[in-house]
Amino acid sequence: MRGSAILVLRERRVTFSFITAAFYGRSGTTALAGEITATTWARFFDAYEPVRALVAERGGELLGLTHYLLHRSTTAIEPLCYLQDLFTSEAARGKGVGRALINGVYQQAKAAGCRRVYWQTHETNHTAMQLYDKLAERSGFVVYRKLF
Image 1 (tube, rainbow, N blue to C red):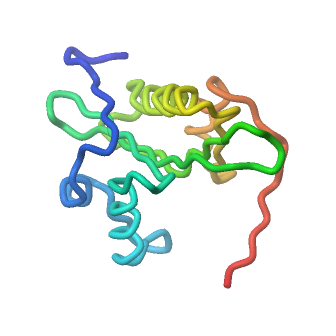
Image 2 (image 1 turned 120 degrees about the horizontal axis):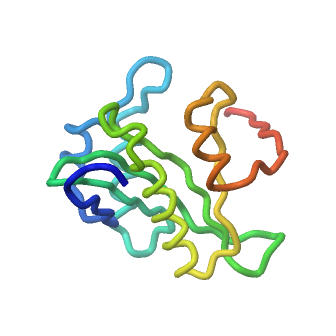
């Protein structure tokens, strides 16, 4: 990992306002309603929720975050881990922060007894896929959805 200060990964010990102020807000077609964001962050602090978060920071500066959730499956006895969102600040890209966050999720998933970690990305996200191809294998599955 590049950089003079140590990169710190931290689980769920960050305030909603800190993240929102730093970079979490989305705009345009990917914008989420405030109620969704607030509910998501409340879940991170609820011990009974399977939704988790890791943040990466260096010298007190927030560099990235990832959301993941643990869930049961009908194809395995052990739980699975879905890495739902991964984000790094522009300044942190290409500096090992995304890799560290994914590896942090791997560690958390192993500790929880998960059989695998999986995620999806948009087909145009080529830069991220270069990293993902080094850390995992493509499943070959196509995602279908129906919105209600």
